Length: 230
Image (tube, rainbow, N blue to C red):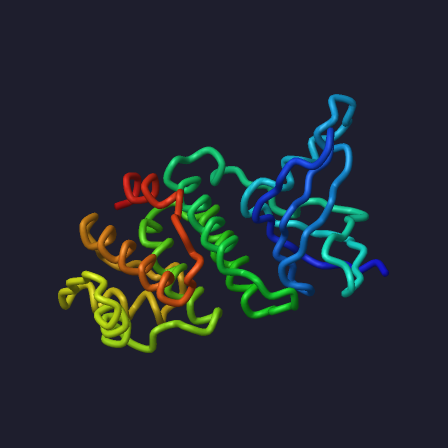
C-alpha cells in the first residue's frame, strides 16, 4: 500500500550498478531502508541522489509492508533545501556528528512523532541559526537521550553514572548550571561555555552514550567536531 510520510535521511550505500539503499528515519514507520533505482546512472535526468545526503528533510510517498525489511519509494522531494549546512564547516561538522549518533542509536521500526518533531526542530535550527548555536550538539545529545529513554534527570545523576563507570569527568558549578539548562530548555536556548568546558562535556556525553549503547563503538566524526567546536 502507498503511504505519505515525512522522513530524515541518515545515510545510503551503493547497490549494484546504479542504485542505492537509503536509511531514512520516517515519521510514521520509524527507521526504514529504501531501494532507489537508477540514481547513480549517467543517464539519470535528475539529481535525486542529493536527497539522500545526511539530515535532508523529505516528503515521501512510499510502499510499505510490515513483513519486509526493504521498501520502495514512489515519490520523494525535499520541502526544505539546505542553504547553509552543507557549506559551512561548523554546521556540516555538527550535522555529520548528529547523523552518526542517530545512525548508531535509532533502531525502532515504528513511528515516534514526538522524537521526529524533536529531530526536525533541531535540524531546522541548525540550518537557520546565525549565532549562538555552538552548543547545539551538546543540547542535542542530552535531549535525544531523553527521547531514547536514558536521559539524566539532573546534572548530579549524569555525574554519578559516569563516576560509577570510572569515566573521568570534573564538572564545575558553571558546567552543572549549563547542563541543567541544556537538558530542560528549548534546544536554541543560549548557554555560555568555554571551548574547554564544551569539549569536556562533549567527551563526557559520548561516554554516557557508551554506557547505554554497548555497541556504540568509535564515533568517527568526533575528532573533527571537537577540533571545530571544542
